[in-house]
Image (tube, rainbow, N blue to C red; front, side):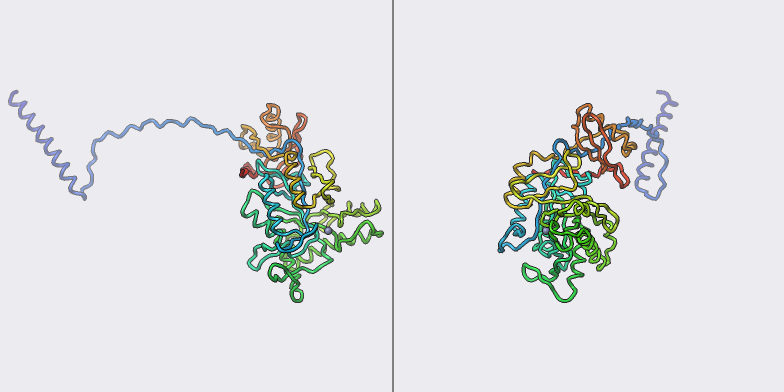
Length: 422
Ligand SMILES: [Zn+2]
């Protein structure tokens, strides 16, 4: 090594030393602005361009396939557990047992109106069930506590409590009233209800009807004074009995300022004593009745006891007659019969339609074609399809639109999907 080289080597060492010490010093002087180190800027690792993982879009349809029918149960009044019972008085404890049994066997409450117009839907794995009550309004049928909850000493209150504990049972009932043959027991005394002072019962009844409508109970017509139609000779008297009942229901609602509920009131008649008018013209008074809001009569309910009991067909079934809707008078034996027959009632199934272009999934033609494709590939069975409230019928290889959802359809899937608890 010559002198020159040695000098170079030493000066390099010095520079290195200075650089090192400098970096040590700077490490201890936090105020110093950081010198730009010549760290090579990191070449960006090429981010993996996401392969467009297209999630295929499917629409959930609820499908009823096979025999689409339902039991429609008929109840009347409810009594405390210590009281005697008969065909029109049921102990609340027995009622609880009955609804528990029906729930355990996969039934789900649907509204009578939805059943009649074909838009009913139940969670997948469930079977439809309709509960009706006649002879309203008695407080033992529905009574609202001061805190706004329905009383556990009233049948519809017991049903409400059950549905709160079992949301996959639903909450719905059709109630048929005689507005002109009784007062309403607005005062609770122990486990029963009595008429209170003055006109207080009118307000209480108005509030009770409003609670009912607000919570999925459908009030209908059982005629003003529960007349025996078969012995009525005047058609105008029959007309009066129907009309007065509707007007009185609205009177009680307006008494508590709930005229807003009028449009929700439907038009269905339950025959008092299950008896028809004696004449054809008398029968037509019923069939042609238009309610105060202009709704035509949707159906007439009958009643059957054990011995000639039958399930009620749906609007999709052959033999459906809206003016002869069968009902089953509820009893321990009737519930057993329903459970024995449950395999004759279609269970809701799920069918995935698609894959679809999500933006097209509210297009009824697209849905219809998707159902057509699903049944022709046998991915899904023929039957009645409910897709976000629109209803299609797939039968003999052909799919037809039965009813489109009047509410603006959304791509969101609104059909109940609660799975059946075993
Ligand atoms: Zn009755």
